[in-house]
Length: 156
Image (cartoon, rainbow, N blue to C red):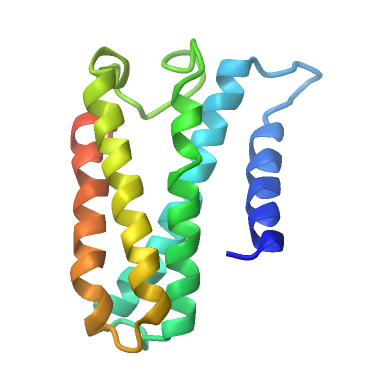
């Protein structure tokens, strides 16, 4: 991923959680951490959705676009964990993270590590893929890694 794109993503995340400042009240570090991780997950969902549409045949497969989106998902997956590490971010500001995240920290971190591993693999495969068939299996594995954490650690 080029440097300008990375800077743009990080700037978007910063702007996203800095917008929580209302009525002159500065959000706490914990509130900022929640917004940060939520923004990272939003970036992932946005890009994963478009890749999913290509894999399902709902939109034409474009290898360059798919690779770009896979790269963004991979980069974002490495950012979100930081937002869980801030003390107090498990409560207070609206969060969909279940208390199990912090009660089962090692298991949760394993899941996040697995997500990062799978998104990295997807980005690597997508760099050279020319057909949707070449990315389908890894896309499915990446989706499984994502879904496994949702089931245990995200409130619906």
